[in-house]
View 1 (tube, one colour):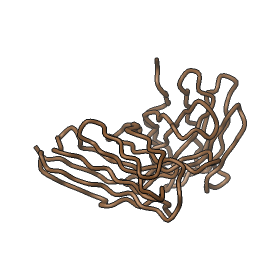
View 2 (tube, rainbow over the protein chains, first blue to last red):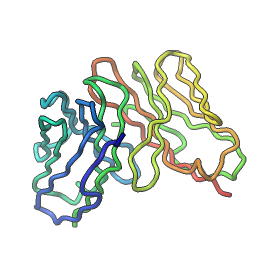
View 3 (cartoon, each protein chain N blue to C red):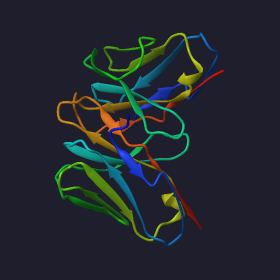
View 4 (tube, rainbow over the protein chains, first blue to last red):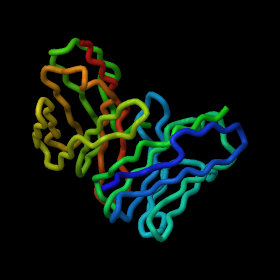
Length: 113
Length: 111
């Protein structure tokens, strides 16, 4: 079975631009979470979506938004990019909301110049 | 502010040596996970511990959950170069929808 997939793998943007990152969860998983991992640190929670609804949000500004589609795939959008948004963005899928077992994708490396 | 603090932050050892990584918090967790992450990849789940005092073994890796469910340790016996990577602990709180990750321990095993 395919694991969590993310696209693109790498992305370079300039300050002020916006970006859309995509994630497909493991087949049968209905929950998708997004995390930001700055170099040298542990991942920080951004959003969780379950059954197409936002179920949790971390301490991130409104420039960050996300959505989940009927097929449970998800998009993370970041507007007005800042240099500090440069990070590895990880998507994790789990079978249900509140599950402590999350399976991570390979991530999208975003560089903001 | 990180809920979970890991120590040491960096560890460089010779092949064959033993090591222990610690994950500490003042918060209680319903379960705790350990992940290993290699450069350019996402974290890979190694183990989940759910009961205070629980000890789990995975080949040369031994994981322990503290009695009060606030801390955990990972012990590696006879480290090998293939153990090199970033080790992350992550805690889950009952009713929460996310994991709280530790600060990470970067391990390098020198052949």
